[in-house]
Length: 162
Image (cartoon, rainbow, N blue to C red; front, side, top):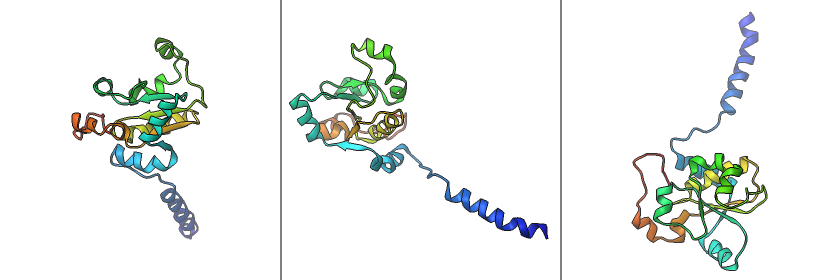
């Protein structure tokens, strides 16, 4: 008799657990694409226009240092994706760059190679309280398609992704 009274509660608890589960992603690219609608993006043409007009914003390249050394957008500062959360509020880091630590409302434009690390970086900065963050849609390859030819995407792992 007791088992019958617990059965509806058990069914309810199991249903609640199943409905509250988050999606599981098999790779970072899939996770980034799922998060894309939650961030703002800017096109390469819009970024070029902002640079030409002399707009004030922080341009961050979140690719690995070796990628940055091969090619970068003029005026960009390199903070690899794995170090972003640690460096973005570190006053000592910014002093070494002869820059001020960014304010929460400062415009920050992020780019990587293809846009996926940029999406995840933008999400991380939003979670840290930055309110004016944009990702360069399509990454540096949208800025200069020749970069894709010079350094093909790393599909073999190693954490460098797109």
